[in-house]
Image (cartoon, rainbow, N blue to C red; front, side, top):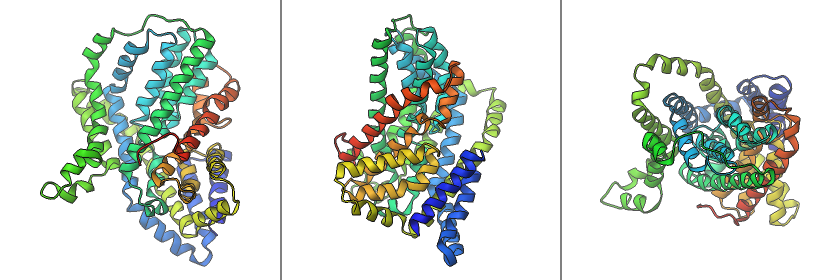
Length: 447
């Protein structure tokens, strides 16, 4: 009944969220209850057990902690100062505004995992700037919508949390720290690809070099160098959980096994929040009332993230206990396709589901089964997780329902339909290619 539960989950989520336009958290809660019914007489027991396990999962806390972190970072203006530094480096190059837009999306992706939020935050600044620099409205909207996927292909994001919290993935021995580091590398490939796209577009559209809108590089670094401290919030937990520093501290007679309790997905938002407050203290002084109002304004987002993560984890748990992973795996193995075609099939399946659904709902529906299926093909589990995450990152660039498409098109004042084909050609199909290369092991990432 696992596959039946999966189909029920997808159908209910699509019906409520896409067709009836209900909030994603509400859709996932209803889908959770509907999914449990696939268990027949065991439905109450399955539902209760899944709820208990989802509530106790630290992934739910981590997801909401990253929302809190994002509010603090936004209130300090830290990302804006990072963008000024990017502008000082790339702004004077031909097509410079597009390079800055891409790196800005990557910077936002490192602190917030929403594709729509990524497009709105970066697009509001860089779309007018790109148009001033000679880019067409269609190109500007396409780039911002296409780049929004960096909110999922870079850690952290709710999609990653849902997959990590799934019991079948945990059973494979995958940890949050491993995925965080590996996804940083996988996401870097996605950033580099997008920088290559900008370079190609610049040459094709003959975009000239223009004067930077900001300061000189030295001035930008002198005034905004403290914004670079945000990367310590990522680097320190990584160093404490991987590599020679971890090996040294975990040796007998030193910190020992206690160092292994450091959780990247829990400590990164805490550390970045502290760094953001310290770095932006002078900008926050006298504005605490405004910060409090911003926090209150994000209460619905806290609720949406928390409820969505809870419902998605619980539904994934039910589907797992009904055997969806084993059943999909048997179906794939029974097809007797060669490994390259099998990986491509899983990648395309993830993207098809991510087109009508959000990446969060996609992860809940087929994230864990896809990881299990890829692992059965011999793909290392951590690589399998990153492959699935890169696939689902196409959510924002997949016509016709990706919210970033309409946000970016509205800011660029262009008909969204004009971006559909370019998005598929430049940001959906190539990302499938990157995910396939990751799964095949031809784009190496640590695992």
